[in-house]
Structure formats: structure tokens, C-alpha cells
Length: 381
Image 1: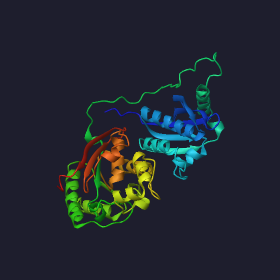
Image 2: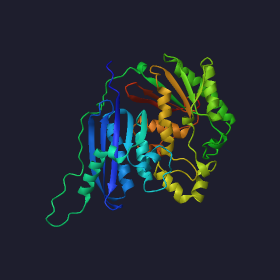
Image 3: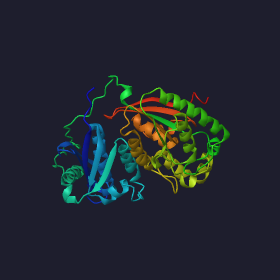
Image 4: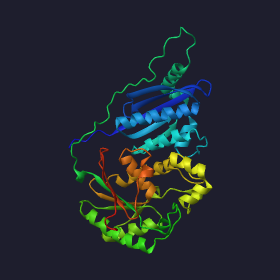
């Protein structure tokens, strides 16, 4: 089988506004990392907006182009210190108007194996800056009746095509098979309370589910060739399942990865949905409407996605042809399935994952992905 080339790219992005806010536009350039060859150039006016909104729009456009090209490694270079620091997780996103764009960028980041954000001085970002300025000029209102019509709003120059979708069968033996496992029922699961970072205990039912889960996972693992790998969230409800699975597999070692820990629900931790609705009605509606917003004192789904993506890359790296068991929680598993299915954030509120459920996803070394099962609970029902 001929493997597709692993594409590594540099995304240069910029944006600005004449007046802040004012007629705004962005520019983005995508280059092949090895050669510096320009693969895509993008520029668009976005109406009246602020500089920061335009900068984030350039980032989103550049990352979207990199996804379309089939890139697996991305280095983002921008002269916006704010965007680079916020996307790197070092600065909080205090401006509510930027959060939807930041969430969209964070969701795109999960589509790659590795992403680095690097600040550069403006003189090292001249091409993206020029595209952004041209877009801003196109967005200005005409100076008078004789003003010429603006040229088309977006200029795109694709040079490399993304791998074409195909129905051609793949050998499952060549993939790393990810078994995404949710832990058993806890005291908070049974009461339908938000359960994030708290290290809550399994119920007696959860203990029984964990035993059945371990047996089923061991059966699925033994059906494949290759030495198995077991990775888990550090919380004890997951460690319990991971250790029992490892025992069933002959006492293999378990690796703990902080990237798979549950979402931090902040002040909502331990509360029911109804209790949150009563105390934070506006914040709850906003949270349900945007993966970029966090509960008070907590973590957004975009934040979770930003740490789950590299955790998945670590889990499957160099494990082609091997079964990889990941024991985690509802939010990280949903985010992995969202990305594997190329779905929107709507999936996060429509997909139900039962305690001790198993989902299967194959990852090929060339970037191919296949979802084989979602929330299998035959072993506990």
C-alpha cells in the first residue's frame, strides 16, 4: 500500500481594521514547511470589526486551509501577541466577542497531530499583512458615485490538493485501534450531577460494570494482533477500570496521561443541571451555545479539546497495528469522536455515553480515521 505524504505546513496569518472597529479584513498564507512553497493564499474583508476579531479570522482561515490540504503538523506564525498567547493557553480570553472565534480555532487545532503557536515581529509576517490590508481596502465604502466596484472579496491560490475521499477498503491491521472506554457509574453519575475533577467513588453498580467492562475490553484486545497499550485519566474512577483491564491482559503496565482528565466544571461541580439552571441561567445558555465558554471558574470544551488532541496523538504514536485502550470520561471521549467524525460542536450535546461504554476508532499512520463503534454497552445491559 502506498502511503500518502505527511504534510507539514506553516500558517502565517494577520488581520486588521481601519479604525478599530472599522472596515476589517484578514490575510493568511499556508506554506510547506520543508520548502517554503506557498500552497494557499487567502484574503477576505469581514465588514466592520476590531483588529483582534480580524486577526482571529485570519487564524481560522489559515487553519481551515491547512485542514483542507490534509496537513498533520502545523506551525502558526502571527505578529499578534494576544492571539498567540491566548491560543497557547497562557492568557485568558476576557473579551466575550473573541471567544466564538477562539473556540473555532481550538476546534480546528484538534484536527492536527501537532500545532505550535509562535509570535513573530511584523516584518516577518509581511505577506499575510499585505493580504489583510488589501482585504481592508476592499471593505471600505466607495468614495463616491464614480468609485469602481470592489474586486471579488476572497483570493485563494491552492497549489496542493487535499487527499481525495475514498471508499477504497483499508487494512484494519495497519491501524492503531483506539478503544475509548468510559469509567463505571459513580455516586454523582447516579444522581446526574456534574462530575469533573472531583475524585468520586464508584457505586456498587459501577464496580460490577467495571468488572464486565474489563472482560469485554480484554476480549476485544485479544481479537487483534499486536501488544496492547493501556492509557488512563489520573482520576481513580478511571484508574480502577484501567488496572482491571491491565490485569485481564496479563498484568501489563498502565500509563497515566493528564490530557484525558474530565472537564473542570468549576462552580458547577457536584450540582445537577436544574440547580445550575436556577443559579446561572444566562451563563448556562451561553455555555450550551459555545464550546469556547467555560462554567464559572472552570474549563471550556475548547480548552479540553486543546489538551485531548495531543493526548490522543501520544496514545497512537508508533502504535500502528496495535490496540490502544484509553480510559477516560464523557467530555474527552465526545471530543475525540467529534473530531473523528468531522462533526460540529452540536454533537457534544446530542451524543450520550453510558457508564462503562466502549467506542472504537481506527487511526492509520497516513492520517486516515474510521469510527467503528460508538457507546457499545452490550456487556453491561
